[in-house]
Length: 231
Image (spheres, rainbow, N blue to C red):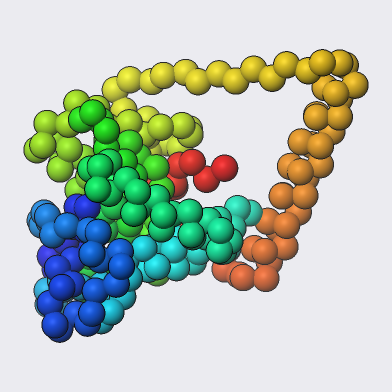
């Protein structure tokens, strides 16, 4: 069936059949691009996420589900993080810097990407996908549409940003090194810092193992594209 990718928008949800547009709908324009077949089905891809659905809220929910069974729960369980992203949309969308994209499958959001575009450079930031289709690599479908759109619009650079996820090396033709230096005023401060980081790492692993054991099967299924910037 057709898979649709809506760029800088979710859909034309100003239509009466889609319910009243929310505050974020009003900020997102109608530009779209379609193409591809994944997977085969009789039903066409729809134009709306759902009646009255707010796209940023759907994005939050999908991200929480995506990371619920991992050692790094979604940041969007925190109301302050959700409020920050909503405000970010309101601030940067009028400047043309926001790239909020979704791939629709059978009328429902298959994968999202929340990122940026500035000075003809696409900045990869926060992708997610529907965990029910993880084995079908929806993240790679998302990347396909984003790369094709960037090429068509002659974007000068597609920046995958930080992170060593294998999929980035498959598509990148250039690697930049980013280094960080921390200066301590005393040897004691150094050892305190090192001990705190070690404790946090051990606690994170312990909490992750407990979360996985409570939500078996441990997820997401193979074949997905990991996200970047999940620190």
